[in-house]
Length: 120
Image (cartoon, rainbow, N blue to C red; front, side, top):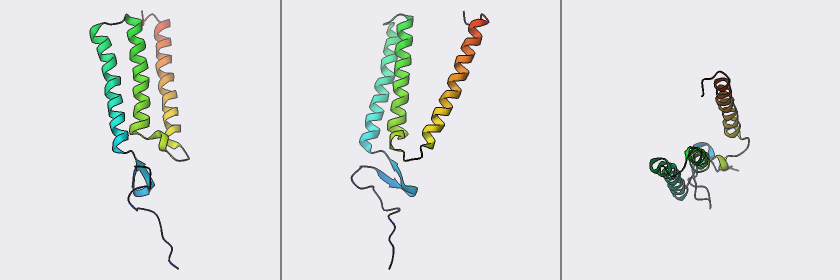
């Protein structure tokens, strides 16, 4: 009896994703288009706010931070396909570790500068 392998057979059924070597899925054209449009909108919003001076400094910073976080989420979901990853989630664990390291460095630097009179 011959055994058949399902590896390398074109497209995954019913999901609109293409399967390439190793069983990795990639987003559909619709997914990339939605992600691209969201990225454009999330880039234009802070640009318009800053260029037109629509808000005071604190409001502008809040808009920049909120749109940056939303942009980060769009990139992870629509382009890096973090929500489609199968177990174990090594990419997610690596991302979280990287964020912890970056936040630690940034917050510690701000704390040091604030107490040494640099950030006034």
